[in-house]
Amino acid sequence: MYEENNRFSWTGLFIKIIIVVIFILFTIWLLSLSTKNATKGMSNSLDVLTDNIFKENIDRMKDVGKSYFTTERLPEKVGEVKTLTLQSMYDKNLILEVKDKNGKACSAKNSYVSVEKLETEYQMKVYLECGDESNFVKVIMGCYNYCNTDICEKKEQSVTPASGIEYQYSKTSGGSWTPWGNWTEWSKTSVTKTNYRDVETKTVKESYSYDKNVTDSKYTGEATCPKIDGYNFVSSANGLCHYTKTVTITDEPKCAATYNGYTLTSQNGSTCNYSKTTTTKTNPLTCADTYKDYLLTSQNGFTCNYSKTTYDTTNPKSCSKTYNGYDLTSQNGFTCNYSKTVSNKECYQVPAGVKTVTPCSGCGVQVIPVYDTKCETKYSTATTTTTVGCPTGYSKKNNTCVADKSTTSTTTTTVGCPTGYTKSNNTCVKETTTTTTTTLACATGFEKRGNVCARDNVYKITQDAICSEGERMSEGKCYKDTTHTETVTGTKNVTYYRYRLREYTGGTTTYKWSTSNNDKSLINAGYRLTGKTRNIGGK
Image (tube, rainbow, N blue to C red; front, top):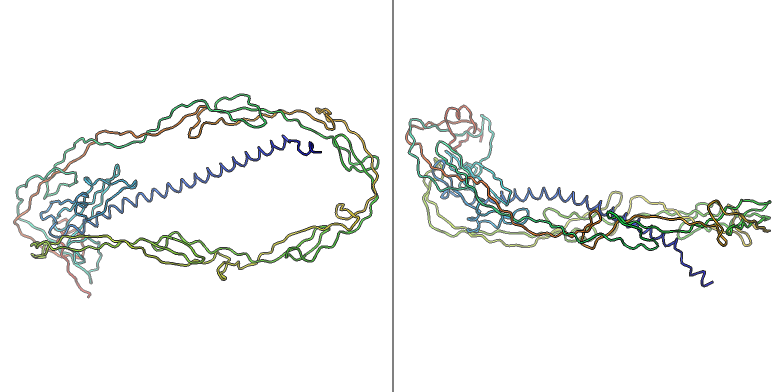
């Protein structure tokens, strides 16, 4: 008896191995599918984030330019350009370090904000260069009636003739041009040629360098075939390993259902056991009224059917990751707790003398104090809370969510037969039995081995060869990839600009008013906006 209970089953072990392998391959497939979708979503999110970072840096530099170019710092002659580089902003503590999408500092030397004096207004250009990415924006600025500072960005306005604003235009005729002034220093700041400004350009080849990641692949040897319990290794080629094993299949011939008025009761190898019984029938036992807090609904033979009504519960909805600019810190039931770091920039001015300036045409001469601005940034943590509700179909009760509709669940159990009876189909029977036996031959292809019929089957499997951890396999060979950094150098064409200015003097200036700030008839006649406006009609 001891030897029979401890006999090892190779067939059972093989079936278990196959089930484990299928489960592992299915899990790997699910993980790869999930990773692919997550990577695609992340890529889309990173593209949007990169664009936002560059735009925010441009806006930061433009805000600094608006604050810095006060009346005394503006260019005075038409066509003149004044420039504030990003490096100068750092030196004057006007802005924190500007970084690109990869966290690397943008070019402090090449990035700048420039202001050019037009006839009656100013043009501000903001240029940003971060690695191989560069772009710029241009805005028109001037001394308008809606400005809160010396100059501000121009707004497009639409008015009606009945009430609104008129814009002043001017045209000077009968004058003459002064000689050209001296050339400015060469600069990368882009400028265009106008009546007031002569421009020269030159293209220079300049050196550049950047780091590039290079992957080296080293051959480490042939891929190896792992051992598989119960299988014999046969051969390997192109990264595939071939195995075989021999399995003995047993077969018991199928006995006939009846034999000489007897009914089949069991089969032992080729031996068929039959019996013949005299049967007395009765009903199964009666089901209990309750079973594990379920109530009896019906009985179908040996099967007892029960049911109960319950209300499902669930947790409140999950809090959103952010709320009104705050980040989620914790959730306590229906309450969402948020916090954020708040920065407060405190600036103050230090007197630095006075200066006599002319802000814009028609504004008169002003004596204004000159100040140096110093700023400090302080940080603090702000908190807030909000609440969430229950998912659709649930209502809040106490500290949980309870389903609005009840759920009916069912279960079953079985009963047996009265003492002395046994189950047969859907009834209980008491039998008096007589027995007999007969013997069968083995099926074609099988041979008699002891009490069973048997034959040998040969199984073949193919499996991928493997490489060491950290290596990759290609066509049965193993490689180890390493990455190093190489410096790429070269030259590129860079355009430099310089300009000289002249003025138009003398002549007679004629002024006209229009309800449009883009009056084509006046513009075509040689008139230009002066920057002055006046209210007409209305209040």
